[in-house]
Structure formats: structure tokens, C-alpha cells
Amino acid sequence: MAPGQVFVLSGPPGAGKSTVGARVRQAFPDLAYSVSYTTRSPRPGETDGVDYHFVSREDFLGKLARGEMVEHVEVFGNFYGTSRQAIADTVQDGRDLFLDTEVNGGAALKRAFPEGVYIFLVPPSPQELERRLRGRGTESPENIKERLARVAYELAAAQDYTHLVVNDDLEQAVSDIEAIIRTDRLRCARRFEQLRRLWGV
Ligand code: ADP
Ligand code: 5GP
Image 1 (cartoon, rainbow, N blue to C red):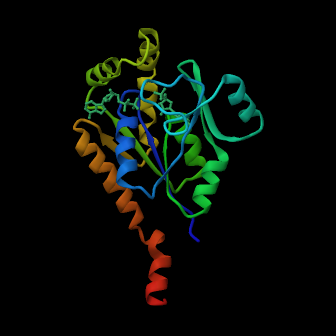
Image 2 (cartoon, protein in one colour):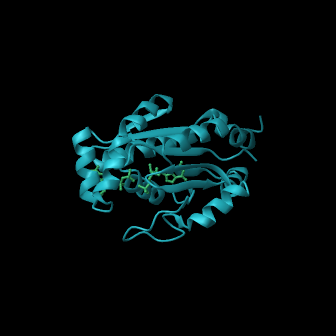
Image 3 (spheres, rainbow, N blue to C red):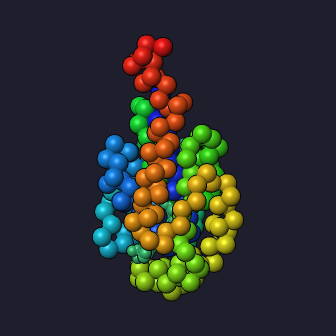
């Protein structure tokens, strides 16, 4: 069976990755979502095992030491990482996987899955990004400052991504990402087995 595809969504904090990601997951129920591990506390409305696996620092370091993370990063005072097993099980099973990571995670995944689809999401302007980040009201002023300080670093990595989506109007951004996923699924390389089955070629 052909392996599944990986779709990675990155972009500066406040770009709208969680909002857009949730909509994309609704639109493609067959798309598996990689639930990351993190040591940060849940925000109001976030559910353990759905938005993240919320774990202690000790648990996270244990997973790292045992080699259970395919990639990880320490940002804004917390660890974030992707489970090696979850990715392998999904992709080897022929299922497509959607991940939301910051740019170092995106680069690590690109080394592991060079044929993957790497989508970079940006708000329409730096002012709007700051407004959304503050408007979300989930981080302390100090943490927001740290997040804003990292924006330029994240933007510089956009050139390594395969697609750029501007999240001005939410519906348009969601529709752009849906189009990217649909188009990738229509590529010949991904459909050749189907063609062989249908036409016996
Ligand atoms: P990220 O996951 O990239 O940090 P979020 O999805 O949490 O970003 O979005 C940051 C804030 O911006 C949230 O309060 C969200 O509701 C809001 N937001 C997201 N997309 C849009 C949009 N297109 N227009 C206006 N506000 C948005
Ligand atoms: P937040 O605290 O806003 O949920 O996430 C902070 C940053 O961590 C975001 O840029 C998000 O994309 C990133 N992130 C979430 N999960 C992972 C992961 O598993 N790996 C990496 N590298 N980054 C992640």
C-alpha cells in the first residue's frame, strides 16, 4: 500500500493555525491529526488528548530520552513534540496526516518526509498578528512579548515551505488549504495504484 502523505501547517504564533487546523480537520474526517505532546498548561476550552497531550516536564524528558519523539522544540518556556510512533503508524497505514508545528519542527519533518506538503500561514499584517495574539487573551504579557519576538525568525523559514496561505478572511484561508490538500491527493503519483486497479494497466 502507498504510504500516506504528511501535511504540515506552520506560521507565527497568532497566525491562526489552531483555528484553521480545526476547520480543516472537520472538512477531512479521514485526515489523521497528530496530537502533539506539550508541557504547557491547557488553555480554556482545550482538551487533553484532542488539542495536545498535556504532560509534565518529567514525562516529556522521559519520552525524549527513550527516543519517542521524531522532533521536538523548547519555545516560550515549554516543550512541544511529535510522537514518532503516531506518525509511523498512520503514514505506513496509508493514511494522510495533518500536523501543526513551529518552523524547526517543520524543517525536521521535511528531512524525514521530503515529499510532504508544507503550508505556511500568515496573518495579513504584523499589526493584525499582534492584535489577534493579544485578543486571544490566553498568554501573559511577558509570554506574548516572547511570541512576538520570534515572529521574524518564523517568517524567515517561510521560503522552505511549499505553500503560502494568507489568513485574512478565515473562510478563504480554510478554502485555500482545502484546495491544497485536494490537489495533492489528485497527483498522478498518489493515484497511480487506483488507475492500475481501474484499468488494469
Ligand atoms: P495560532 O494557533 O497560530 O497561534 P489561533 O488559531 O489561536 O493562532 O488564532 C489566534 C487568534 O486569532 C484567535 O483568537 C483566533 O480566534 C483569531 N483568528 C484566527 N483566524 C482569524 C481570522 N481570519 N480573522 C480574525 N481572527 C482570527
Ligand atoms: P501554542 O502554545 O500556541 O499551542 O504553540 C506554540 C508553538 O508550538 C506553535 O508555533 C505551534 O505550532 C508549535 N507546536 C505545537 N506542537 C508542536 C510540535 O509537536 N512540534 C513543534 N516543533 N512545534 C509544535
